[in-house]
Length: 318
Image 1 (tube, one colour):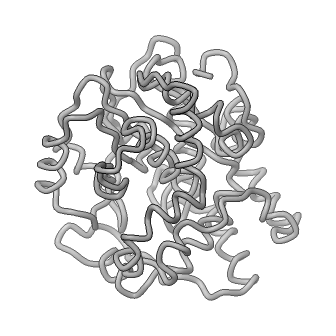
Image 2: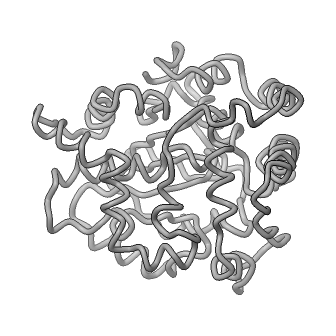
């Protein structure tokens, strides 16, 4: 697809998402969009950008207040988000969980695509989903703008339930054009939708495993990509400020709010941050479903990068 530009071809509306909400976004030169499917380092990358942009300024608002998730239909009213973004004078950075076929593309905006091995995504999603509270479930399944089927209740905490969810997540899509990701939305398709446009200068791919292995190198890449020049001391400070422990502690002031959505609050939302927990949990039969989904949804280069990380192949920004 060399030379092609992304186009909006799909509308995403379900219990969590409403892609129409992006109509309030008025792009500025240098804006940054952090986009992931979910459980792939979204908040981590937002914290990295917060550290890079504000350089540890104690007067800066926390990530949750300065970097909105625009396509979340259950979050703040659109007018409030639009006013907040209009008032920001610094380099703005926002969050999305939309694939590129449902997210507006602007040449003046930078897109940081963070992705992770699907098997690791699932283990993190399992913890995330089963800690949903009754309060957040009510918000997800209510409201005047609710569309489609209701979001199913969180699964019980046992291995059989985990494997049942895995089988559904690997073989069902929430939207008609998806074939994996239920009961949320696509995971593999999300990454592939951006990978198809990897030739674009304003897309950067960051792998979760690379962030774990070389945080300084990856944060330096991100800073360079968004146009922020860091000294060695500033880079070291950004690495420290974006560690999982520091990130968890930075969210403590919002713990009461987090408890409305997650049993365990911040500690449930910012959990282990590790990979490989699927080993010894998912069986060979379970993993065969992953093999089928990978072949069905991903191109070979994208599939290889999602599993191993490292520098993407030619045509995709390293």
